[in-house]
Amino acid sequence: MAPETPRIYVDLDDVLCETARAFLGILERDYGKTVDFEDIAWFDLGRSFDLEPPVLEDFMRKVHEPEVLSAMESVEGAIEALEEWVEAGYEVAVVTGRPSTTYDVSREWLASAGVPHQSLTFVDKYSRLGWSNDGPKVVPLSELGRTEYCLAVEDSSDMAQYLAGELGLQVLLFDRPWNRRPPPAVGSEATGEIHRCRNWREIAERFPRP
Ligand SMILES: [Mg+2]
Image (cartoon, rainbow, N blue to C red; front, side, top):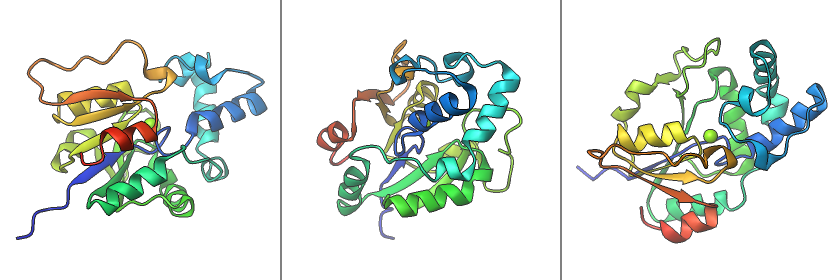
């Protein structure tokens, strides 16, 4: 049997597309709040944007509307870096924690942005209450380990820690203001590691053959 193609896990929001920047636009337009990108200090947007739970819920629903998601910019250098991996014989698996209601628009965005990928998987990464994250298309976090990956690219510190600590993966933490503090610690018996990378150019240079 031919060996399986090595597979790379690539997160979608704020790794492939500029999600937080789009969210800031909605925050200003619909909620009259101006927050600088560099001041998004927490992955928890309620905390970063100082939104009470009911307002946050409304905000999260609004930013996941198709017209917001489909208008997002791709992250600089991402497509070129993925193209190089695919050319070198890797499979790109996009793994997102978005609500499953965004399945169609997410697929369409990946296609129209020209993101080379072999799969798109919805995983219940954050156990967000009230999200439609229990649909048939959504993989529970506990089942993520059934798929083999040789590398993962993530911007969530918690997910990076899970991938390195629980699944033993090499993880590239895509540098963002909300993942700079404190550096995620990986258990001493874990086989995975977390490397912080500033951008896709750096990833392509440091990990041409992960
Ligand atoms: Mg993300």
